[in-house]
Image 1 (cartoon, helix red, strand yellow):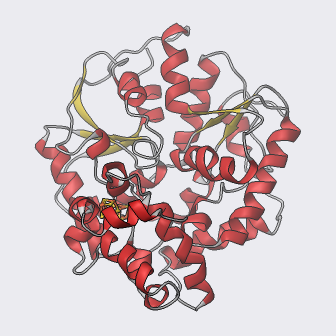
Image 2 (cartoon, helix red, strand yellow; image 1 turned 180 degrees about the vertical axis):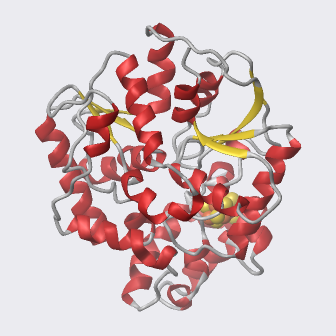
Length: 371
Ligand code: SF4
Ligand code: SF4
């Protein structure tokens, strides 16, 4: 990603990004502006050996505010592949198991990933709609210790899609969208996965792909479009699809327990994709539910603390605990998420603390309150 002379000249006098960055607030010396400056002075030098190159969460809080439109996450990502080639690797979280699972998928292993869907609802092998489940099917195995039933979120999304009258394709041949490979600089793995997914969707004959995960949606919206050009199908995140379709569907909601909830804007759904209203509209479908906003919300929301299963640190934990405190300060008894990783990270941070707040995904919240 090339910066123009005008962008560089402005940038050297600015610093808005560093003042906006949640990592810079926790990690001494970390500065997005400083990193841009370093790349200009030493294009192949010190920056490629630095740990800072991995510390950015690609949360886009900085780029959303940059007066000259520098997408810092995309900028720094271009150095990550080069850093890998120099032997500077990120610290993979959870013993690297999810990056390994991704790499195995890229090798073309035969998967059995639709058993849950056959039990949970109506699906088909070919059709107009493709439900892109994402890697949630693998998270239950990795996060048993958090007592999270992650697959339930996919089951409930399928139930809600069925309520709108569609029976989507759910495919054994779907692979990881490549988000974690892309953002950790593993460009080859990303490319292989992206090509496989494009073939799988084409073979299903889908005209619309509905994403259960904000990462998958943002990857198709940005990286797939960049790689393949205009996509031969419509893409939509499930929150936007349901917000459009559920009010006209034969389904009504009744609050089982009246409560105040808050919503954690996922970076990939909010700042990177501009979707803020759809999840809030869906929450408002459940009568008796009050939505209280956290101090930092919508464009100003704070990330759940880690990304791409790498670099989980005391900085991540501090951000996550601040998020729990903000939710409680807003008077919420539940944080509703629309991203599996936000749900996992906030639940992990809550463990072994005295925070007393529920954390639930949006699909399950809606399904639980169907009348
Ligand atoms: S906000 Fe934009 S222009 Fe300002 S220092 Fe950061 S990257 Fe440079
Ligand atoms: S993307 Fe987020 S973490 Fe990375 S530099 Fe910008 S504000 Fe900081």
